[in-house]
Length: 375
Image (cartoon, rainbow, N blue to C red; front, side):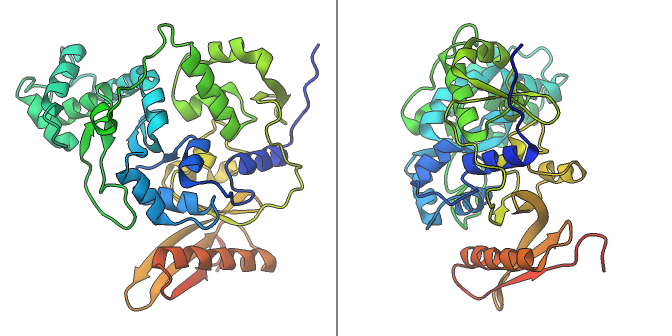
């Protein structure tokens, strides 16, 4: 009988922080950091900038904007059918593996509206609409398709078209301090390269590479965590085929955890700095069991779009920002528990640095409210 080392929740927390570049800011180029963390969830266009600022030393938001306009990173539907900011290379390599999941998730919402629509024909029609190279909103694409399928409705048709045809959301959407609507263009058109083929059995090299990338950024983790992050089925078979190259542990609940040999697993007592995370950060959403970083009582915050503050590696507060042309940026921190004097000082210091980023060096302030449930 194999005896597995048990990793405490705190040890898993420190491993996650190390893999996610949150234990110590990294000296990585922005493009390499985006690749390392397997992309950043980005349905809120400005949030990836905060996510990278919390992970990188001397992060300049303009660099990420340049990568977007230079087509080195793209915004596209991938994991869990959410918008992710990923490298162009990963978008091309991973998109085909997500085809079935994206289609099924749209059908889960619009099955009745799409009843009787041949999806192959719909994909062909969508490509024809987009073939002129003119970026379109999903609504514009849906309305164009509705001339052929008037009973289905533009919304359902547009959503499914985006699932069937790999597209990128073009700049200026997602640029620093820029508000812009979503305009889509086929990934192959925008990047000048087609997406990679999916293996016939869904269990080939793409899947193995995806598992390795996930474990490098999120391990040690269970197969349920991998599926929660990716939204993909079929990966357990890939994991089973890879077992000889992986190491295994148990968590305090007895779940089997998988990891890469030699991957960072810091000591549980390693100090963890205060970090401000953006909405929908994958350091939290990248797991089925999020107990390593957030208490069950606050789990709902992770899917509600709350921005959170890590204190000693765990979610201990939420934060918001407000910019007034006359008084600069105010970062307001709402603790979820009582913070010690030292913790408040550390939160205030990091909050001032964040406010300076958000206000571009203008006057900034940090306000910490009373803990929830206290006057």
